[in-house]
Length: 220
Image 1 (cartoon, rainbow, N blue to C red):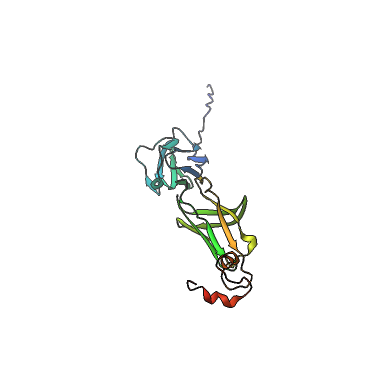
Image 2: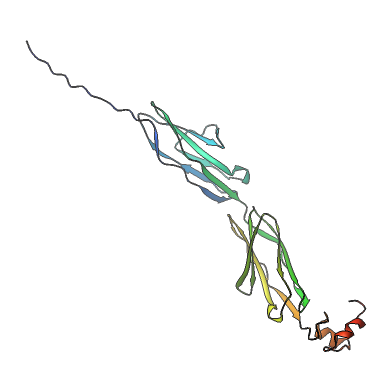
């Protein structure tokens, strides 16, 4: 008798596994967005990309590109990777498509009497939320984030030291607008606190140290 030894080979099959999932992206409208996935498994791998849980037609490769993406393309994207054993689903990757802000109505010059409120306003296009950064000269004095195209900046009970040059930059996930032209805030001194600027009183024959003569201003 002759003994014959056979060696058996055992192949281990692994279910598809995602090692590098797709990542979040933030782009400007009109740009391309590309999602990628890295996976391994047993035998050939299949891919199916999904948008908000729904399969995307013909999106069946390890890389998926959205050309000239628009705001409507924003949302959650996933990919299902399968092999002969099973299927793995990636975590969601969020695509944010933004329209860069453009200031369409810049703030205007203001003249107030000392102690009055000064209210700047501006209008901007762009995808919400918008961040309105108001500046005095080159110093940011407030940053207001809002879901509205109209921005307001109020300086309550103005002081003479509030006078200066003010401007605005609006930003969002897509970038920042150009700075608006600087505009002046003029704060008129009011020595007698009658609500009339001293310069106006002097020009109209009123006393800057007599609050009672404010009654002589029939337009007040």
